Amino acid sequence: MKPPYEITNKILFLYGQITEALGLCRSLLLLKPEARLRKQNRIKTIHSSLAIEGNTLNIEHVTALIEKTRVIGPKKDILEVQNAIKAYDQLSEYDPFSINDFLKAHKVLMEGLVGSSGQFRRKQVGILRESEVQHVAPSHSMVPILMNGLFDYTKKDPDIDIIKSCVFHYEMEFIHPFEDGNGRMGRFWQTRLLMQVNPIFEYVPIEEAIKNNQEMYYKSLADADNSGKSTVFIEFMLEAINQTLRNTIDESNPGTIDYKKRADSALAQLNEWFDRKEYMKINKGISSATASRDLKQLLDDGRIEASGSGRMTRYKKIG
Image (tube, rainbow, N blue to C red):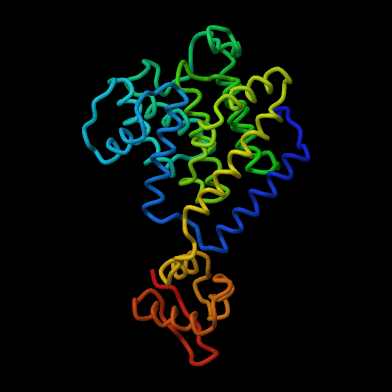
């Protein structure tokens, strides 16, 4: 069954904003942020997702652990960060529509932290917040059936992929398939699903926006539970995604786009054979002189070969 939710005007507006931001990323050739920003955003992602779960290490500690520097702190908190570093390093290797890969990712995230890492829970659980039971999860016997249905929906339903990633996040939290680590897995797997829409999402720290609005995050989960549909949670998550995309664009300093970024972007999108006009179509806004210089440099670098002359010249990618 398709999970219950409504497509509201707010959802449509936010989806439009996100689509606009992704279009801006493409026009700025921001397929992947520069190395400095990728590292910075990965640190923010890991720190924020674990801080939501009560991890006490600060962002300097997380940075040190990523750099393989020894830190002093609670062993459990250090292990949580080390596990998250491994999981996010492997993020692109997981099949977003595979339950087996989903379980593998949980094993990496929770290894040494819970005895049943990489396995669905085998007992009844409830979610406590401030000593009150906020949510009683479905019976453990239903978990495999519900998770199979959720993956089936995510893979096959024709609805908008970005919206489906939000629905997956909420429904996974509702099912609560693991004894522990459900929150970080919900955020982790939504990122993996979003990467199917655009690879830039691997380096967009949506978790930071969630952490900075943590009370609203929990409230939207509770409100969705009470209403019996994930609509309000979808709205919250789309706001977080849009906000984080805009921040990433601002921090990327797109004014420094250079030949290498233009060339890498074009070669990733062009067919095996192409001409200067097609190169310019990918790199909107550049002059014909700049395109000619880029193509000459690509020839000198041995990344393309040429056939023909003058305006009839065509280029072929090498390798």
